[in-house]
Image 1: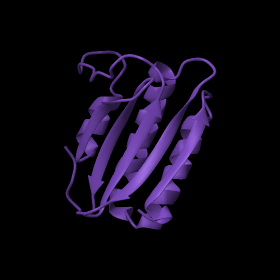
Image 2: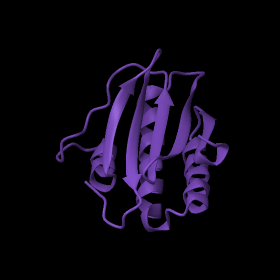
Image 3: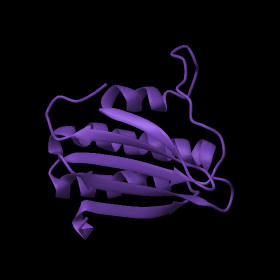
Image 4: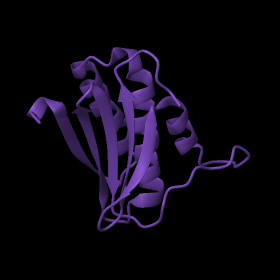
Amino acid sequence: MSENEMRERFYPRRRQSVPAARKFAAGAVADWGFFHRFDPIVLCVSELATNALLHGVPPGRGFLLRMRLCEGAVLRVEVHDSGGGVPRVAEVADEGGRGLLLVGAVADKWGVGERAPGKWVWCEFGCDEGGGG
């Protein structure tokens, strides 16, 4: 994989990290020409970064945002954190926690992987104009 096919940046546990992650993602999406999926990709970065800050980043730590352009023109977003627990999709009636519902609605697929310590949550977007769900 060449350098222009993967980008990553580490963000500290601060509120300003979410808009910084969105800006970083927007640059990668534009550079890779995924304009037709721009808004859904940036939305998912925002939701996954917010979830990491609220639920996955212990004090004094941060999260890693990694974006990959994979074979078959698939863009993968990964957010790595060092917190415990497994992300869950909220019920529609819940007051909050709808971030993964949004991710599931606009990404082609998503999932959770384990790491030591913590986890990583990912979602993927194909280059086709369809996508979603």
